[in-house]
Structures are given as structure tokens and as C-alpha cells.
Image (tube, rainbow, N blue to C red; front, side):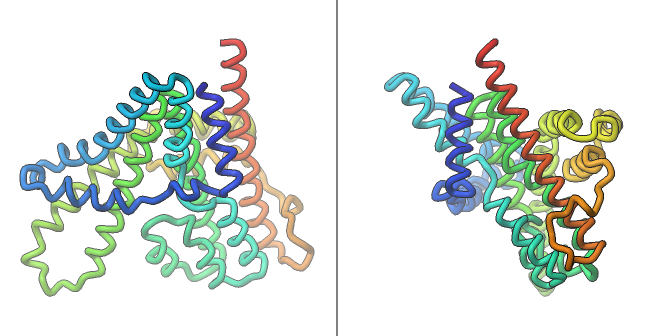
Length: 318
């Protein structure tokens, strides 16, 4: 059943390019305001964060149990496929990468910055504004794209295979919470310092909530990022990736995005500009950077295929 749910959800992603009409997250902002503005929870942000993330997970788990009791396997399918599709990452990853590569090969740095926006996360504008050359932009996009692929698909599938739909939804709720706090911090930074004294307590509370969300997200990503790293070693350059995987295996400080970048660099090995799909009009530097992004995309596709193959073998022989 798990394999069928995954295949149906991935087929819909291929049709829509993303979660399509199911990716509507406005409700989460209202839910966050409702929970964290409760007087009893304002000073108990850890409890508030737990309710914020776990309540939707429990609601879907109850809905899943009810659907199974009423309709059996059909009920599980009807609830699980839309729920898993909702848990996948937002936006069309492949289209965003393609748009970025088109601008990159044309040598249009400003257009490449705009195209890179969907890959860079909530604070993209601040990061892109500090970029002054093409090489810096490429490193920023490469770093962000690897993590974006991980959070939109691989981490969701990992927790779905381990804990079912509630596990996948737990990860997505954690991601939405982290994004909401990141946007909140960005909005706070944009406000002038005229009311700094009166807003001091609120800013401290927001910082504590954001730090808790970031730490929790790091913890829930710790296992799937190691699983993906080992997968990249198998489908890519084993020696280089396994070395990076072993070095970061028990690391407690490095961010998920940094660990993934090290894994991907090791799995890619030496990239040659001849592997670039662009025409001869593109200069050597552009070809080399473009080849790295294209190879990353191919490697992630092979890793996903490996996961699905292992799932199928488990169904057949497990």
C-alpha cells in the first residue's frame, strides 16, 4: 500500500509539477497566530510550538483511522495520497532550476538572481542582494538547491516510510513553522527601531521561538539527511561521498544544508565542462558551473529511483 501511495503521489507531482491545488498554506499562518497568541502559551513557547506542529498531525491521524474503519484500504488511499501530496515541497523545483540555467547560460546575472528566488528560501532577497558576481551566485544556488530537493521530497518520503502519513505531515508542519518564524524575523528586522524599547520583549520571544523551530527541524532532518547521503554515495562517486558521509555522520553542529552540500560535492567527484548541455557559445566558466547543476539534478533523480526500487523490492520480497 505504501508503494502505491508514493507512486500515485509522485505521478500527480509529474502532472502538476508540484502539489498543485493542494498547496495552500494560508491556514497555517492563522493557526500559528491562534496558538501562539494564547495568554497561557505566550511564555511557554515550547508547549505552544508542540501544539502548533502536533495538533494537525493528530487530526490527520484520526481522519486516517476513521477512513480505514469506514472504507478499508480505499479509505486509506483516499486520505493518504492527498495528504502525502500536501507534504511535498512547494513550487516546481525542475522549472525553477531550468529558468535559472537559461539565465545563467545567457550570462544575465540579474535574470539569474530573479530565477534563483524560488530555490533560496524565505530570506532570498537579503542573500541575493549581497551577491556581486556570477560565481558567488552559483555557489549560493548550488547550496540552496541541494537542500530544496531534500526538504521537498526525500525527507518527506523518509518519514512517510518510517511513520506513514503522520510522519510525513510532522516534517512538513515543522518546515512550515520554521518558514513562518523566518518570515516573521525578516519582517521584524525591516521595521524601524523607533519602538525598540516597547517591542524588546516581543522580539526576544520571537527569537526564542525561531531558535526552537530551527533546532527541532535540524533534529528531525538528522536521520533522513544521512540516509540521502549514503544513497548519493551509491549512485554517485562512492569514495568521495562516503568520505564526507563518514566525517559528518555524528556531527551535531553543521547545518543540514551544509552537510548536504558536502555530500553532493563528494558524490559528484570531478565535473568536466564537457558534460554541460549548453551550446558552444557559452564560456568555459559558465559551462563548468552549469554542468555541476545539471549533474546534481541527475544525481538526485537517480537517488529517488533507487529509493523507489528498494521500496518495490521490499514489497516483493519483504
